[in-house]
Length: 266
Length: 266
Image (tube, rainbow over all chains, first blue to last red; front, side, top):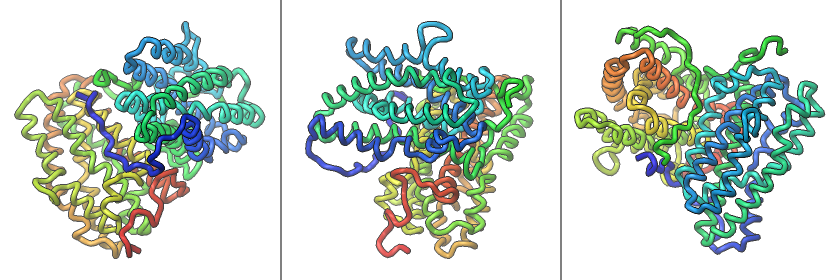
């Protein structure tokens, strides 16, 4: 019965034109959403790549972001399960391979775990996810539910934040290597792979969306799906900022500096 | 396929004893969770009932909390849909009646709309939910998904925050009437009803949980479900505090003071 449970109350249309956009106009409209809402604009991202966070604040980011990474293949499996077409599934399944790898110790999730270990965390503590913020959990799960409950077009369009990720990754890697002596190139290996994976995935998804959003209403749905996804990323940085930067109110149960680290981690 | 999608990664057990608690010990353990985590302990609640918020901050609370209220009968319908027993459903359906009322203009949601209108909002703007924080949306929807995906015991246990609500309601109503000249007894009519409804509902749910949590593992599940629900409430106040109190960073799309009000509202 939950499959039929579409729980969002109707959101009023966000305005905009009623005419059908050309593929390049639609692409421009989608890129404009990123230019105004992608989380590279969030103050937490700025602090992170400018070297203005202390080690514990970087740890909080690595720990929470692990849950997002770990759920991405679950999200992609939910998308895959809605695809009636083998050709489409053959392309999409690569995302799951990228994150889960081909063997123990391989894949994007593993590389994120290395990042978390690189800043001092005990692997088992990260895997347990018990120190993450509830706001992280709810935001990530909102994304998984979204792709399972909305149309396939919306599910695919919500992945389009990858159009914007090469920029943020370059900023982040360069800034973090320059500004934090506890961050090494090995720690950030996750991002190397994403620099080639994300554009490949985004090109495919953008192509799908421009081909299948064939009415103004479907184009609006695609834009709203991307807006939703920007909010999923934004709320995660809001929660990190609130708990660990200002006002620094850590909610019950969430990780507190000193917890979950390997012995000897400073 | 989403019905089978249990998306939370396993959370490590929160510790505690492995022996079976007596019904009164279990009740005490549940009450202890409330004593440590219920959102009456959140700084935003204190500011609200102490009269320390300005009118726009009270508006932000009323607007966001509307979405929670509006989704409660959807949540209860999801619980109802999982109950195989007519006797159980006969009791639970009263919750839906309480919120939806018997006719247009009746019921808890309608009374919350009156509260939102009482602080100056345009009714259509509130109904559209387009100004709510994404964190509100994700938290509320996490609750709806939780009751649809977890066991019936966990779904019912998650409602047990109602054990603690008479206290918060009394504090809130007295404090708000005393401290805000724009709040009237009529505006707060929602809470009058809840003072009798909540204890009746909580008694039933507590009775169900103490009868059906017959192993240490089930008792732990019930406690974790209540903890989860406390976090659903807590994250909503965190997000309000962050956006509208300190640091006061309103996310893209969320309501900004001045928007959505009826003409003439100060």
